[in-house]
Image 1 (spheres, rainbow, N blue to C red):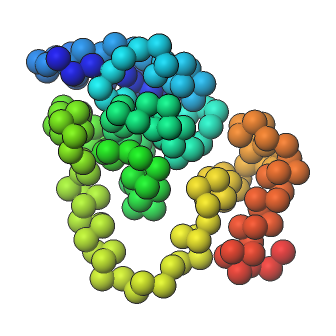
Image 2: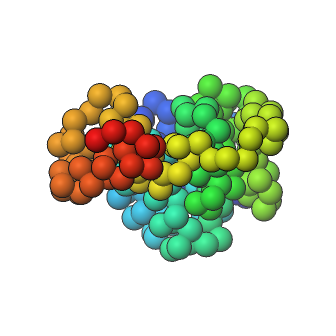
Length: 195
């Protein structure tokens, strides 16, 4: 029996994932969390084989959360479930310690296969994402400006791009506005933009 934890801030998504997994034989959902702090608490109190983790939950950024979880529970396998189909997110998730990457649009069809493969010690990536990885091998090796950013800087850039203010970003990331301003300055420098 594969023991699964589900971390997603939408109850409807958690219910759907539980329904899919428990409808397939060999899976038991042993706990659920709805934000980063409750996810950390959950992995500490429940023994599990796989954590199905949403990258975009309130609290700590998804990539940082993966790193933290792998430090605390190195044997817990992490399958990222996200709305972000961009390759950059997948690369960062895998580098942080994820074992699988699945977009929410393909989740219902691929979830059981993905959890099974990750639980067995394998790596799972959707066919569409694998094709993007393969195509990127033919791209020039010079790093694009956004690829030079740290995970936190990339997260701040994404939030700025969606129109969030420095104060809003600081509140969501639980840091000071001054810290976010420092990240913004570093982002502008690394991306060679005037500031």
